[in-house]
Image (tube, rainbow, N blue to C red):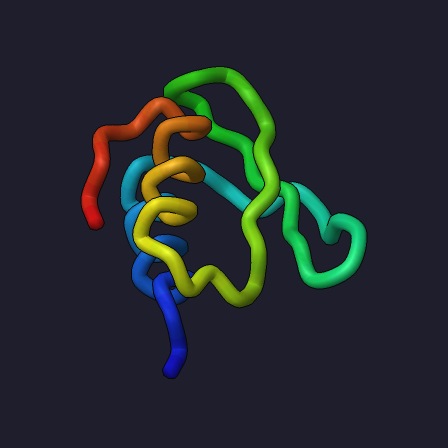
Length: 64
């Protein structure tokens, strides 16, 4: 199972978010122009709740 990460990244890119750098472990640091904040994105998100939490940090509405 691929999880929610590929679709989540598509949504983030469509909203204007961008990859900033690699983080610790299997995380990436992304930045959102909507919220003006940076936030971590895990490579293996398997919970819709976690995927929606990332969207919330980016200032975007729930999708999953």
